[in-house]
Image (cartoon, rainbow, N blue to C red; front, side):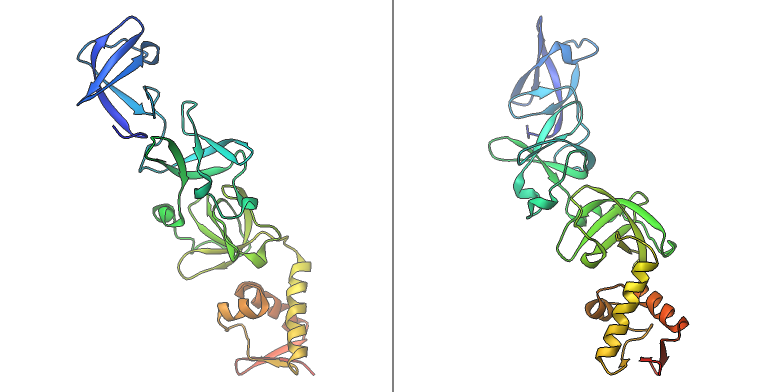
Length: 276
C-alpha cells in the first residue's frame, strides 16, 4: 500500500490491545484505542498509511489531492505542516522557493499535497500556480482602489502572486511592494488595474496623495529630459508604461490626470507635451 494514501482494510484478528488488518498480501496492526467503536473480524476499517504504521485518524489530504493547511512550526530550516489529527509532515526544502527570505513562516496558509520517496518518507509539497486554476474567479467587476486580501501562492523577483479570499488572482509587481512577502503570507493590496483576463494588478505600497505626486514627478522628469514631449499617453500599452515608468497603466493615467488638471501637461495626437 502506498504511503500517504487512505486505504480500506479488513479486520482479520481482534486481540487484547490491537487489531490485525489485511488488504491483499499486506498485514498491519492497529491499536484498539484508535477506533471509537470496537470492530469485529470481517469488518472493514478506513486507515491512513504512514511509513511504518497505519492510523485510523484520517488527515484531510493524501497523495495526489490538494488542500489548504497551516504551517504548524518552523525549527531552523525545517518546516512542519499539520495535515490533520496532529500528524506533522515536513516540507522538503527542495520544494520551497529558491530564496530563504521568502520561505513560509509559522501560521502561513498553504495549498499543498503529499508525496513520498523511495524510503517511504512522507513530505508536504506546496502547489505550483497551475494547481490553483480551478480556484480562480473572474475579477472584472472589482473597482480600482478596492482593497483585496489573499495569501501568497507564488514568489518571484518580477512580482508576487496572491489568491484572494474571493478567488481573485492578484499580481503585485516588484515596483509595487517595498518588501517581498513570504509564501503563504496574508497580504492586503490596493487594486491598481483590472486586466482584460479578469485578474488584478495590486499595490501593497501606501495609498495617498504623496504616491500620486511621486508618479506625477516621474512623468514630469521624463518629459523634461525629452525636450518636453513623449509618445506616451493615456492610451499607451500597459507593458510599455511599466517598462519605462515602473508603474501600472492605472497609476500612470491617474498621474496624467492630475498633471492635466494642474495644466502642467496636455495631450495631442496620441502624445503628451509640457505646457508652455
